[in-house]
Image (cartoon, rainbow, N blue to C red; front, side):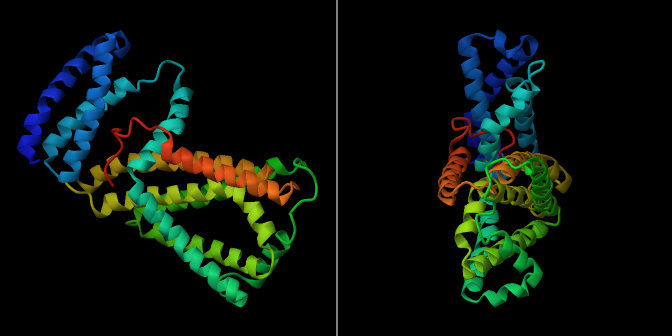
Length: 330
């Protein structure tokens, strides 16, 4: 479909949406009739899709601006936070908006995932075959410390030993620091994000391969499997957010770079915020559950369940409203 035909086909719905929007802004969306609210919702989703089409095909800044203005007004009305409802808005974002936004920008996620897994897998296999290679990436003292930590099922005591709160705080600070750098370094045309993802991947792979070679695979993987579901996934999502920033600078399309950063930067910030919430969960699990004296088989069972839950959450949560104002074809 070309631009003139697209406009002639869709402008009737745009005009109708503008009418409903004008009425709703005067009274409130909840004051409209049931059929009008349903029509408003349908037209709003269609308008979001139309905006994504116009952006992806570069059909003009003026048309994009007109549709974007309608989408912004519609979003403000449709998702208006009631008094005292900011907490609910955050929960709604985490429950559906965040995974939906990630799926709408999944191309960046897959690239970040490749950067974060492939180098680590290669390093892990090579070092598992020849553990002396690990000293080219880490000091012998660091490797010895890792081996000492994971030579057994870390604790022999129960689930609570009194140090969990302090360790949880440490893990939050450490993990959020890594994720923030993955996101923020995207401003360097995405190169900084890519380098950091590859570097962390190789370090994790080196440690994994070394511990496997030394016969500590079971204690190590039983320790990381549970919190890794949240932590590793969140780091990849932070990397995806950094790549969103990088592409906005490298390929702003019909926008100026400043405008591209403003629009796509909001997407990146929301992705990073969602990743931050996942890191909070990861820190809690890593502080309380992962180092506990629970049998390793129980940790593997729980860890597998958590991985399935995280994948299902990101793949399925928020289905039915895939087109959002922030989402843009990746």
